[in-house]
Amino acid sequence: MKILLIGANGTVGSAIDRELSARHEIVRIGRKSGDFQVDISDSASIRALFEKTGRFDALICAAGNVNFVPLADMTEKDFALGLQDKLMGQVNLLLIGREFANDGASFTFTSGVINREPIRTGSSAALVNAAIDGFVRAAAIELPRGLRVNSVSPTVLAEAMDKYAPYFRGFKPVAAADVALAYAKSVEGLHTGQTYLVG
Image (cartoon, rainbow, N blue to C red; front, side):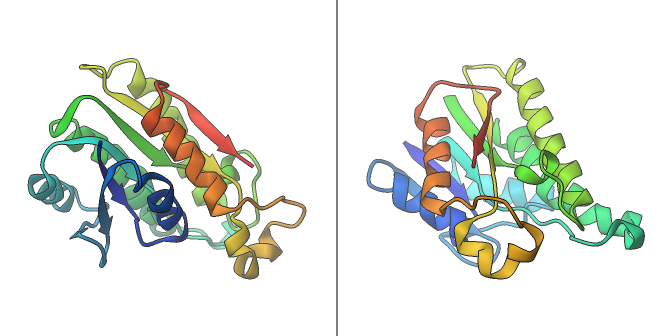
């Protein structure tokens, strides 16, 4: 399969690459690195990417930004980053990408644990994650040509605990390699409309 991997240089993206590259052709995509570059917050950038990469069998997005700000200090502008980047970025990858996807292709997006297990400063992430998972369930029943869409919702990464441990006390972290298995299940399996919980 030809797999477009957005966020390929990140911790999760690198683990997905290691998991899938032995079996598939991986096209590595980043904001500033990789074989191709894309700004997922910009639909014109997304369309330009697909015009360069051409037809594909699977798309994985392991990228997306949100702001972590205490609710007392949150403004509409603080929410806008997550809504435009992580949420609409992934939605637009499907809306635009379906034109370039081969029959039976899959889309796998990334949400996260925070909408199920809230943390301090995480209201924007919780909103976006819940929206992604909801979009996946609803979009799956309307996709034509055997197209599939799923999301992966990991807990905090073991590799990130040095930075994020104060926000995730009591959480059992998960290794990026284990998270990558959920993306493999989405790409290489048959499910659609699913959110794979990891950790």
